[in-house]
Length: 104
Image (tube, rainbow, N blue to C red; front, top):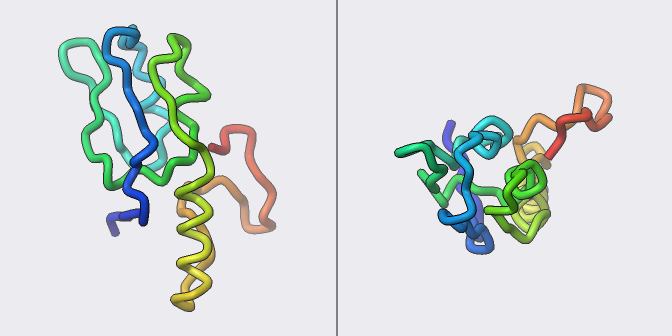
């Protein structure tokens, strides 16, 4: 299943000049928004971005910014209205709802 979010990562900004090519954004993104090309991060698919903020919080070069929480909230509300599971799909919680240390 491929997730698409209401705001489609509109607040996600990548400053390619600041990017040091560490790849942390690609590792922490729960929906594979990023790819690496020529030693730099690129936004592969903006529509997958749920604006969780994990990429920006883990970027040591401050090359990423995003308004965190917007997409997660929209996904949870959408799940509630559509009768589905009210989750953003990032896998942050265990079966008891506790957040993990690596949560976005």
